Structure formats: C-alpha cells, structure tokens
Length: 408
Ligand code: MCF
Ligand code: FE
Image 1: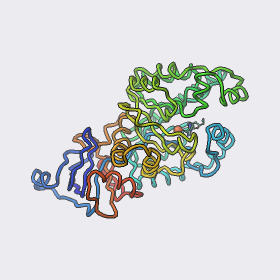
Image 2 (image 1 turned 120 degrees about the vertical axis):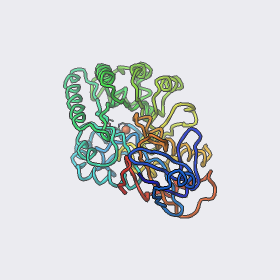
Image 3 (image 1 turned 180 degrees about the vertical axis):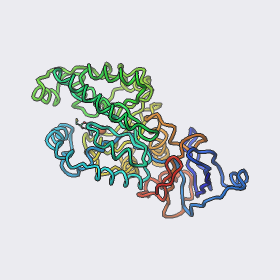
C-alpha cells in the first residue's frame, strides 16, 4: 500500500471538496484520503511519496464517447454542417478504416494515457480496435454498434452485430467491458432497436446512443422533411422517418447504465425523458462545433448529468481530454469560468463513471484507484481557481495510476 502526497487533492464529490496538502492511501482500491498530516498520524509505518511542488492529485479522466476506428482521419472529412460531414464519411469511410491499424490505435491510446485518460467508452462498428483495447492499461467499455435501417437487410445486420458483440465478450475482463451502442434514431431500424435493447436487458449491458445532434436530424424525425429526406430518398427510397424522438427514448426504460451522445437539438420534453430514464448525456463540445456549429446548453440541463467525450478523430483534431476540456471552457462563454471548470472536472471523471456504470471517477474509500497527478507550472494561491488553471495548463500529466498500478 502506498501514500501519495501532493500540493492539492481534488476529491470530486457532492461538495466539490479540495484538500490542500492532500494525500491518498491505496492499493488497487482507494483505502483512505485526507490531509497529509492526519494520514501520517493514522498510518505511522507507511512510507509517503511526496509528488513535489505545485502538484495535484485527482481521479483519472474518463472519455465517455470516442470512436477509435476513425483514428486515421485528419483532413479527409468535411466540417461545417452535418450533411457535408455525413457524405464525406460515406465517401472516405473505407479508406479511413483501412488506414486505422492496430499500431495506430495503440499509439493513440498511449498518447491518451500520457494525457491522463484512464477510462474510455469506445463505440465500435467493426471490432478491429478490440485487440488494442484489451492490451492498453486504459479501462475500456466497448460499445458494439448496431446500425442500418434497410428492412431487407435487418437479419444480416443483426447477425453481424451479435457476432461482434460475442467476439467482444470473449475478451471481457475487469478492464474490458462489452456493451451495446444503438447508432441513432434515424439510422437504426426499429426492429434492431427493439432486439438489441432486449439483449441489453437480458444480459445487463450498458447502452449508449447518438441522439439529436443536428437540425437535419430534428427536421427528419419530427417532420419527415429537410436534408435527411433527400438523403433517405436517394439512398434508401425512404420518405418517412421510422420513429419520433420520444418514441425512440421510451424504448430505453429499464436500461441501467445508459447514455445519449450530443443531444444539442433535444427538446425540453426529450431532456425531461432523459432525466426520467436516469441517463447521462455525453457532451462532445468540439464535435458539436465542427459538425453542427452548435453548443449544448449545459446550463439548461439542471439535474441531468453530463459527461465529456472527444468523439473520434472523425469530428475532432484531438483525442486528449484536457484539449476537450479547454474547448469546453472556451465555448460555454456565458458561465463563470471557475465554476464551469469545477463542473467540467466532475463531468470528465465522476459523471463519466456514471455513464459507463463504473466504480471510479472520485477519490473515495472503496473506489478503484484510478488516479492522475498533474503538475502546474507555478503556484496556485486560490482554491477557487485550481480547476481552471489545471484545465488551462495541462497537456501531459506527471503520473498515471490505474487500478493502483503506475503506468506513467
Ligand atoms: O458522433 C459522431 C457524429 N455522429 C454520428 N456518428 C459518428 C460520429 N463519429 C463517428 N460516427 C460514426 C458512427 O458510429 O459514423 C458512422 C457510424 O458508425 C457512420 S454513420 C453517421
Ligand atoms: Fe460519436
């Protein structure tokens, strides 16, 4: 067992507790924490490792929504509006997937680890990132994705989805947890939604879905019109949406660990339903900016929990959580920066753990010891500014512990 001591300890709890000269005692779980002097007095025989000046101990970062399969993209996809992006995905998808090798995904995971990410929620359409995810120390919840709305294809699509899920299940472990993603209300046939949710309930699997990220999706789902009408007519000969947003949401009742990604066009009623379902919103600020020029109004969410995801390199220039947090700070201009920073750190740790159903994301007795150490360039005098300064100044972290083991 080990005691680590830093200048600050961010606990991430209901009261946003921050402890000056704080310390944590842990093996694979957190055993105790508090002010260094009280821990020293309690555990006289244990050695203390002082992490140095201007250091911060906090829970590891949880990237609740990422697509590793698109890791080879940098400039191939079009940004600015959702339809251009979608068309560019259709054109470039095969080439991008081809280039996203296990070696490339390994490299990305390693960079993420150095940046303080200790857990990811990875959306998987093909399953070829499984190998890299089972080898990285980063905890992975792997969401096998069901997608497709063509009626004459549903049997094939469902069989393929189940095969991918089964292959993920073969690698299941404490740090690799198979789960289910339903791509979105517009792209998944109601039969596939129903059957994959049935499976999720039977096997008690986490579920995640993209939900109302573009105005085009809103117009199509609510009114059967807009740019999606053209798209569906041309590609699938379909003129009516198969579901309404509320009908889609209703089907998720009874899922324990549930999250919806984006939700920037969700109505007040939709948000009310999301709250009732106990779901978490995965907030991907950069993706929303580049694909849809839209900001999730987090100030309207009130008691809906939101977590932070980078999405994939298909809609971001970085997979680093601290880059994403900096972008979040810059787009939510109507909120007090220091209060927002405290909220964002919680979103990137404890709320991510809620989205993924994990006993992580906070410094509390009994929680998994996923801990990072940030090193600030200089002294922070005001506790109120600590989270802001960390978000502004951290690119790589000093140390990373996952399940009590040191990896950086
Ligand atoms: O979250 C972003 C934007 N919205 C929807 N899908 C994706 C995103 N990044 C990657 N995707 C994937 C999705 O999982 O794109 C594929 C799906 O497999 C094509 S369908 C839009
Ligand atoms: Fe996504």
